[in-house]
Length: 180
Image: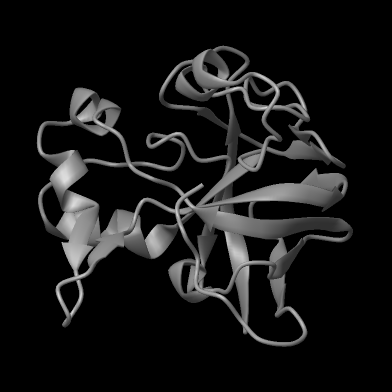
């Protein structure tokens, strides 16, 4: 399975949306250089309030551009970075990846997938109804979260739009993604 990076974004402050850039640098064990969510321990405000010593399993947020297409078809105006993602991808079934998958981005960066992003009500602050639009139900009635995945940086490097993505599945049994 291979795909490509369509956009990269970051924000130095805890704004909901992030600014698309020409490139971002991923730092091993930390996340996106200069991003408010970079660090070894949790940076999301609600998680910091609960326990600031928790490991940061949400260093990098990835969203598939196909979700943006789906949302545009449903009448939403969503661009790369709007939903807080650092890396926007195309051609990789992010939501179908197992925990522990390694995504090789560009020449050297590697992000290990830790879980699903649990969408929050701030999405409705971006556009009314967006929260509901990124949630669905499968054929068995189980909740499907479509707002992207989270990961940690294993190997650092520069990531740019147009960079290839190579998917490396984990060895052994695979476990479906859960919210982190």
